[in-house]
Image (cartoon, rainbow, N blue to C red; front, side):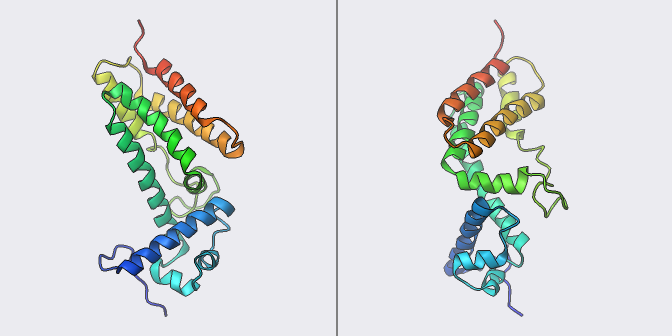
Length: 207
């Protein structure tokens, strides 16, 4: 039996860490190009130029590897958003920064968008924790809801249900990105401008 490295091991060598990152990048490439179902361990091994047993040494299953891949993508995405939101001078500006960052990151990282779409947003049935589409995505817009609440508390935004408005803004962002994935000629920079206008019309104080 091939020995396996624990995903939580603190004793990985530099070479092992590099190999794990290579496998994650190969998984991103395959999911983005062929979809989650077609991304088998054998296909990942072939993409990486190693044996399937070598893949299993680092990740004990396809689910283990794809979950590590999703975690990597989400961490990169989250760090990008947080950096830009933290630079905003006030909560209202932070909401605008959030909307623009959501679009700009996805425009620059189409492969990552495909991974998130395949693993979180597509409804393909199966068990909640191990199959794409069965994850609870209700918390995806909690950061935006928190920014909206901060804007209300600062007296910069009108009173409204922050979870509902966060879902509305988030849904608009998702719709634009979904259309762009199918029609890459869509001007995402112009779309971001319209989304900001849409957002401010929804949240700004009247009069």
